[in-house]
Length: 58
Ligand SMILES: [Zn+2]
Image (cartoon, rainbow, N blue to C red):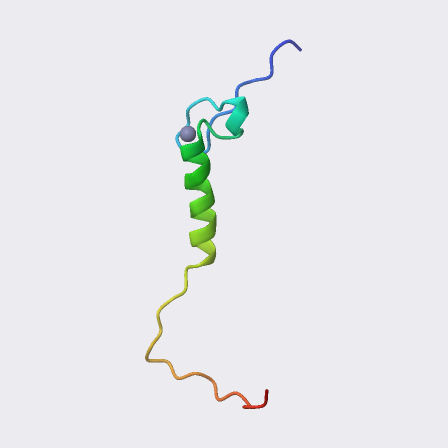
């Protein structure tokens, strides 16, 4: 084993660089992070659905 195969950036498919593994650049790393974060923040807008009447004890 002399060289590890170059991994491709999962965002754009370019060869990744060691500094930003597994991405090719900070930009792609940010894109991935943003995807991840926004994916967690996807909240369906359901204004017309009444909230379940929860018990009001604190
Ligand atoms: Zn990239």
